[in-house]
Length: 288
Ligand SMILES: C[S@@+](CC[C@H](N)C(=O)[O-])C[C@H]1O[C@@H](n2cnc3c(N)ncnc32)[C@H](O)[C@@H]1O
Image (cartoon, rainbow, N blue to C red):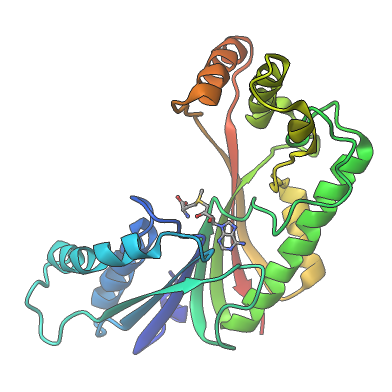
């Protein structure tokens, strides 16, 4: 956070795609600590913090709400202010809805954050009928499928930028971390869904799941390249990119029938290539 743009009195922020679990309040805690530290350094009173936690209406907001009281108490203790008077004011509110729609009042936010959520599309792209046997893009997907996914990303991301620009104050910041890809090609080395597709196809061959259902199933996802993100930001025009970075994270595996198969395929795959989850973090400032 820049001291020049540090708002006095009140800081209003939103975390989009907050989910419900151990990560939900992680970002909020980091922001609170940063604001608190900077206030001290500037010799200012810590601003009141208004935090909006957004996710789709089906998210378990009740679970999030039950953890808020304990979270606030821990934060105050961690910052050495358990009995401060007046107490550090943090208001945390749930906002159900899609971030591909307007969510907040005009010019009402100073900071927007979203991590590992913007790869979800608002809908399954149209025109994926030929993507049989695949559940996402692979090298065997016909060109029309790639185009359909790419177009859906462009539509969604430009709506996202437009709505957020209406909600952020001028000079407000937005930091987005998105599962991404390194190059312009859709590399299978960077995509775990090929193996998931193989596991599901094995199960269809064994009659455990219906082949037709599998053929008609496509994930509403898209991992953009840095160039695709930059192009949409430039086209939409409301934001200046301050910083953009691609970075890798190790893969992880879970338990379940499909995941057991996935794990077997994955270990075989990992022996041959060194796959990585590619993430892209972009920091943007709303133009005047
Ligand atoms: C993998 S979780 C990310 C959780 C957390 N932000 C993190 O970094 O660990 C993705 C979240 O995005 C939410 N999501 C997907 N599409 C969304 C949309 N259109 N609007 C709001 N939330 C969405 C999902 O419901 C899910 O909770």
